[in-house]
Structure formats: C-alpha cells, structure tokens
Amino acid sequence: MSIAVTLVCSGDSRPAANAATWPMQAVLEHDFTQAAVGLGADVTRAFPVNESLGHGLVTSQKMGMNIFRGIDPDAPLVVAIAGWQYTHHVLPGLLSHRGPILTVGNWEGKFPGLVGLLNLNGSLVKAGRAFSTIWSLDFTDDFFLNGLQEWLSTGKIEHDLSHVHDVPTLPTAPASLGAKLGAELRQNKAIIGVFDEGCMGMFNAIVPDHLLNPTGIFKERLSQSALYAAMQTVSEADAQAARSWLDDAGLTFVTGNDPVNDLTDDQVLDQLRMYIAAVRMANDFGCDAVGIQYQQGLKDLTPASDLVEGLLNNVARPPVYHAESGEELFAGKPLPHFNEVDECAAIDALITNRIWTALDLAPETTLHDVRWGEHVTGNDRTGRALDDFVWLFMISGAGPANHFEGEYRGAVVERQPPMFFAKGGGTLRGESKPGEIVWSRVFVEGDALHMDIGRGAAVALPEDQVKMRWETTDPTWPQMNAILYGIDRDHLMSRHRANHIQVAYAPSVGSANEALAAKIAMAQEMGITVHLCGTDNGLI
Image 1: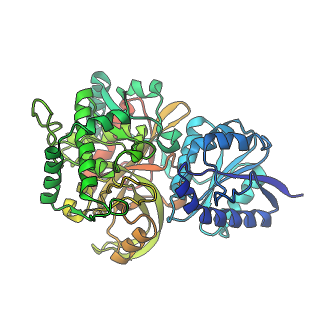
Image 2: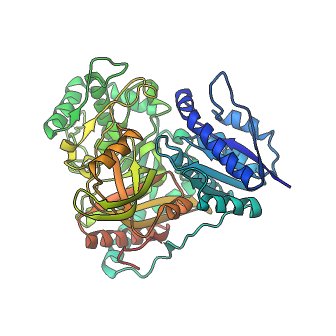
Image 3: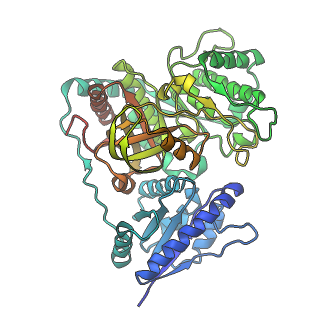
C-alpha cells in the first residue's frame, strides 16, 4: 500500500523572483516525486500551478492559509524549497498541521534555495514545531534516499549531530574577560535600532523582548520612513564628501548613465545619504547597532541599502558629523549593522564587537547567507592544501571592506539587479581574505536563546573556482569561501537554525581560540545557552 504524501511549497512576495525561481522549483518537485514514488509513496501537490502567473509558488500568507484549509491535517507533508521563500506564507498552516513534516532542498547555489530552507527550518525550531529535513544534489544519492525512506517509515529523520558539544571548562583569562563584559552589558544595557521588524518573512530573526531584554539589550523600534525622511536632510556636500573619501580609499564604482539599468552617481549619493542618516539617527537614539529591512519597503523609494551596510560594519569608513555640533559620530569604530534586521545577528554582533575590541582585534563582523558549498581538493592560492568541504557564504553587501583582499582597493560597487531593485544602488563586492575565523549563530529554541559557535578558516580558492562561484550565484555580492573545522555539509545543514551565519577574523590560531572562549563566556553570562560545534578550537 502506497503512502499518501502532500507536497506544498513557499515562494517570494516579489513576482519577478517567483517567475525566475519556478523552473528550478519544478525540477526539484519532479525529481523528489520520482524518488518518493520509487520508495512507495504517492505524492500529490496541494494546489495547482497558476498558468497565468507562470509558476506554482505560494505568494502570500493569505494564499498559504487558503491552501492549508484543503490539506488533511494528519497527512505526511513535504515542503519543497528551491529558492528564497517567505516563511510566514506557510508557517500558520505548518503550526496547526498534525502530521509529520519534511522540509526538502536541492543542493544548488544558483538560487538561494538552501538559504530559504534553513530560514524555514530555523523558524520551525523557534515556533516549537517538530519537523525533519533533507537535501540532495539530484535526489538519487544514498544519503537522501535512506533519509527519505526513514521519514516515510517513521515520520522523522535522525541526523548525525556528533559535532555538537557541551561547553567544556574555559581557559581562565578569556573566561574572566567574557564574563566581565557580559555583566557590564547587562548592567549598563545596550540598544539596537530596528528599522521595521520582520524582513522578508524571517520569523526566526525576530527575538521576543522577554528573551532579549534579560541579556541587557533593548530594541529601539524605528521606522524606515523616518530613515527616508532623514535622508532628505543630508546635504549634497556631505554626501559628496563621503563619495570622495571612498574614491580616495580606492573603492571602484562601476557606474553608467542609464538609471534603469546602470548604477549611477546619483544613486551612489543617495546611498551615502542613507549611510549618513543612519549614523545620525543611531547617535540620536543611542543605538549600539542598527538593522535596515529595506527589501520590502525602502526599495520602492530609494536605492539599495547594501553599500550602506558594508560601510557601517567597517572601522575605516567615511566620517559622519553631527548636523549641528559638527562632532564626528562613532569615530574610529564600526556601527554594527545586522543585515535584514536579523535580531539574532544583532546580539551576536554586539558580543563580537565588545570581545574583539577588548582583545585589541579588528572588530569588523558580518553575517552571511549559508548559500552553497562543495568538497574541494588541491591547493588554494596561498599554497594551503585543501581536502575539505568549502562553504560559500554570501550576503548582498553587509560584508565590511576589512574582510576583503585589499580592503577598499579590493572591493567593487556594482548595481543590484534592476529586476528586484528598480531604484538601483550598489552592493559592496569583494572576496574575503584567507585567515582564521570564529563563526556563530544565535537562535531561539524552546523559548530561550541559544548560540552555536565554532572555529574555521576563510580560504583563497583558485581564481577559476572563485569566478565560478560568483557566476553561478550572485556576481555582484561579496563572498567568503570557508572551512568550518570538524563540520561537513550534512552536519551544518542538519543542525543550523538559520539562513545566516556570523563571522569574524582573528590574526592567528591562538588569538582566534582565545576570542572564541571569551565570546562563549560572555554569551553565557548574558543567559544564552552555548553549544560548541566542531573541532580544532583549542577547547576540545
């Protein structure tokens, strides 16, 4: 007797994104269905393809609710994800669904399907809804088929989580430093400026106040309309001064004269107005970090925020002065920006900023999307021997220039795609330099804050591989190619509670391990449960 399985999916809120993603989504659904049928399942799509729209993706929360009204609440349910998706389109239905849930992704970097899958997974974890997850390159490999058979038979998949460890006894000096800084933060408190909450359906990126506030961090809820209004008060001279500073620093702007398709000088000046306005507003409200939502709001009014985000995260950046007193604001420091208003990343960035500053390390930090990866053998450009899974981490522009080879001189500002960004604006594109990193992720589980943390290294892949990774993903975005020590593809995918991962550099193995230990201690002092992931971290 065959097992009746219902298949549903979640899509973007932007029609152009859904149309672009649909061909790959259709292939994923076909290949998954073929594999499931081969294992004795009968797969039925929960709703038809909309021929007039040219795709079969869920485009709104309302549409998702309507679809789930017609789904047997006890049926085994598969959520297939091949592109970025807005989790809230399907989350209401998933929360009330009683049958076993399986989230499925295709191992492909062209569209951010793996990013969408991890976002959905992290949101289900936060919501407390049990689920299983699986992924595959072509849905014929043993890892996938064995996992799918397990789910069809038992309603769940048990992954290998042997890379996740309890925190051991920490070295005394970094533990004392971290505990001291954590106590200071809880006592003196900090503010994160949230420019509109809940970007792009990322339920997992919203930290409830009752969990956030005991850490010593509080939200200043700001409006993107207020940011836009503040942009209008920034003078042409101030914006041009910031542009001149960047030109002198060696940053390359790829500009043209067609505002519809090119990055124009006027678009760049508007981005710099946003940068200046954000710094001034952060100062006015006493913010220690800020997050701009942008993609479903400001994009209809002004050029992209990506260049802004990268500048904010860097120590060396165009100076911003108070409009009245003339005082330089946040002089000699980054103003950490948590991309896409990911409040979990805001907590992480504040901890990193304070630990790295106290240890006299470069405090630049950013989140990246967990975009894709593959096993690489051979030597990288520095001569390092590779026989490792090398992740591709990407984010649209929040990467600070300090992370790039050549810093500003190794970076390029290119236009965001006109299909998604009608008002234009550039990203801050560069290849992350090789070096030791500490990676981490704060997340919500069981109505409590947790942090996964570990060690790794950014590597300088051969130029042809770097080029391939850009050409097959988003060529205007910055990339980091990273090894996570003691963690392979399936370890991270089965455990990671988010689409984002936080990274920061250290100049040596020893300093990275020291920063890791201090960061763990600070997070623990703030009431965050920490899980040490992987190996080669100086602690286990």
